[in-house]
Length: 425
Ligand SMILES: Cc1ncc(COP(=O)(O)O)c(C=O)c1O
Image 1: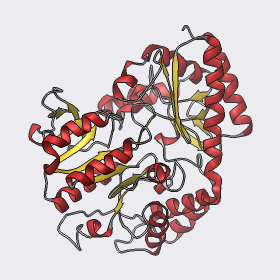
Image 2: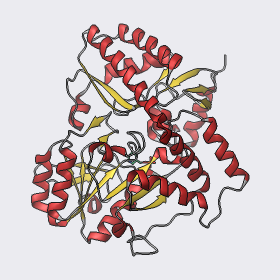
Image 3: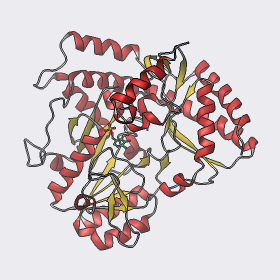
Image 4: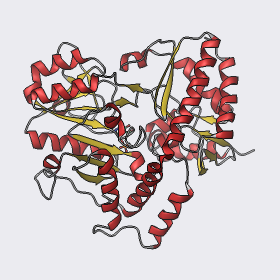
């Protein structure tokens, strides 16, 4: 029988660096399965296999695949054209909706990816504050953005080093790296650099080293320390925005940042990013201010339409179904793993979660990195063999959608039982 995925993979390796267009897609071993169809909680490979999808495009698809209601609106928009180069009504409507929930009284700029959103947010913070330094947290990912793609250097120096070839040391050195959930590490940096720090940027719930929620009090501390030194506080809610309820993680924790970055869900599955926040800060963006931002595809009508339709559905309370699904799965997994006697930690925030093996607490990047990658690989491969697709790394998040209900959950639970029974603790 022809393996269509293998055939495509063989061609792809000649066409794309590493065979893919985003590195995580190459982590499925021995090669990725190619998908050409998806509906609700399922994706289907070109070889005809169906999988229950817990990757969901790495976060955007909180309503699952190809929700009929969203599709109807997209088709309606397509019939009226798809790019105008001039503003369209739907961008006004989506902006109102997002600001109502995430930043009443604020302003928003739509861009095309989470990467662009964080890039723009930092340029804005630096332009507004006229300061050079940024503080970020080890393990928080903010896209493929030179300012933030850095690793901590020596603990004594605070200085960071480029996490990629091609990023200038002169750029990386202005990004200082603190430890998540560790107020002391932030204080140390701020005592030395605070009056030069334009902004502290954090994922309020880390979603790029598994799932690591901020401790209660940690985000409040960040707010206080930013105020003390006159720095801005940026929450990168590209993953958590509209996943952790309508008000995002900032609403959940009751801490108001100065700037928020969004992406993923607000585009309903189409490329999107957004920067929003205090009007006096946002007005520094061009054309009202002097911090440059522009984009051919900014506020693309199809994206705006898909995003608006998605948020409207979430507003009806439907997103609770996604959180319930994650609650069900994690509580079953909790029972199975504790019966099995393996050491593990499950971290969950609403409809995102991760299981870490052979660690009994995961509160920061070091804890997550220490967890057992081999056991996780067995877990992930076992699930895939049984038709359940989770991201092939413990350093990603597992997502649920509003379509993960009933038989989908039952089937997933059966797969979990089988896989856990085969795990060697
Ligand atoms: C928290 C966070 N910020 C920013 C980004 C970058 O978004 P994009 O991949 O749309 O550029 C991501 C991507 O996963 C993310 O998780």
